[in-house]
Image 1 (cartoon, rainbow, N blue to C red):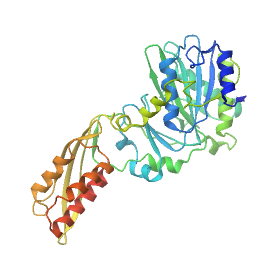
Image 2 (tube, one colour; image 1 turned 180 degrees about the vertical axis):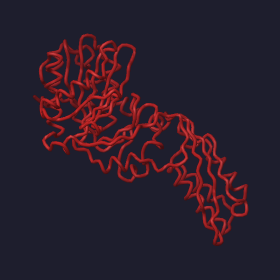
Image 3 (spheres, one colour; image 1 turned 120 degrees about the horizontal axis):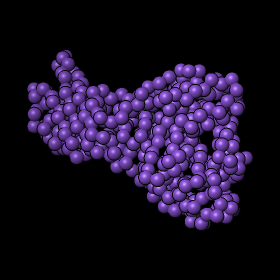
Length: 373
């Protein structure tokens, strides 16, 4: 049964659970099933942070359902340049988010259901949660072949991944979240989760590619809504709570004091890109000069998302060494992104000697460098 969100319903819920009007801090005797009304990835990730940071889950449990508009979500220790096609994401308006849990990169859209299981650290059990999801799916479709693996994924028909999983374990509380592919756009997923970068060397956690499939490709009746209701029913039975899904607004400061500041932090460049483990790029490209091809070598070290070292090597008969040196030194400390690179190269372009041929070479070099970033 779905309870629509409203101020009246929310305060009634808080009253029934003997929770202060300031939030969920002292929740329920046994548990809650929540569902976000927002499709914003940053707001929904902020709910996870807020519950993890503020709630006492001793003797209680929470299941949180959420769905997002098209987004790519990377793990806490991952490298976005290595994991996805950032240029294509910018063109298509797909958001990039870094979550606080580990694990690999996932694609979210409205055909994907996200589940977060909150417990105390002592009761944290990812396999138990996945088995619950399996039971729920089999309750709807008994002939569905879904199994939890030792890697804590869910496989359909023994070969297609339909769910990835990750977790965050705190001092006293923990959460386990997983995706569930119902009707995700697999074409978009495939193109967006394919990095065009070459020559990256990184200690960041790398995602492991897998063959995927949607539940609806197996059975068209397994929509997101059907799956959510089935999992909620199984969760309620398992935890002996009412089978009610309570809709929440992740931007509601009365319910979650301070949550909007958490959502804003998750959107910052310093968090999304700046938390990337140190990495380097070693690559090269060719330019045409007097009916011949010249190789330009590029080596860049990136730390905290900013260029720590830059070495662009061009043949000195094509571009004077002092101009390459000027470009190298100018990039140090700048963000490793095309917007900042464009600004820097445009500024440096105006300081270049007034020579048509030199300007032409400079433009070629700058366009190539922007392509790398």
